[in-house]
Amino acid sequence: MSVHLQHDLDDLHKSLLSMCASAEEMIHRAVAQLSVPNVDEARSLMKQDIEIDSLDVRIEDSCLKILALHQPVAIDLRRITTVMKIAGELERVADLAVNISERACGLLDGPEVTVPDRLKDMAELAVNMLHRSIDAYVDLNSQLARDVCAEDDAVDDANRDLIDELLREMSRSPERVEALLHLFSAVRQVERVADHATNIAEDVVYLVEGRIIRHARKLEQHSEESS
Image (tube, rainbow, N blue to C red; front, side, top):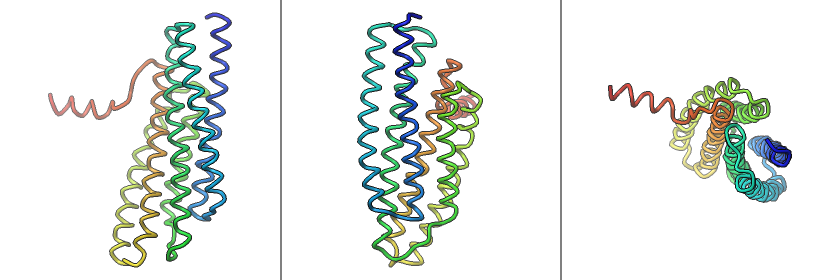
């Protein structure tokens, strides 16, 4: 590897870590608003989301320049493509943070509703998955990444249970439907955070092992059904 390529890769790594820290912070702040909505905090997250968007564009531009100038191969090529994919996932996580914050603020003007403890637990698990997927990238730890992927089912289960619970509550209390819809949307947004954390973890496995495990379980099930 040339000195120039190593320098560019180091700069790329630092930019992605900065994006990771910012996106994770945004999700923490957004989830906190489910219990204590704050309009000013929501506006602050919107501004931070614009910064994330800009960083995403800069990272993609840097990746494309490295590919064009250095024509990397093997692990270096995998690293660059992985950085591009992770940056895209983080940009979507930042969008979700804004969405969650907006849904939380939507609860301010309607009838009082109690945020289910199950939603708080689900949000904590999703945020933890995001944090650990980022750790897996930093440490190049594919086993940690696989552990994160395995936890996605728990969030999916919680998502289904909460949606069912909210639908039942809407039937019992039609006057609170609008407020409950904000919670409904927040649940779906939190579930998507876990999906993006899983995608990042799958990207880490590809980076470290050179194996694509995305959709692996579905493909295995399809193969078994076909045989």
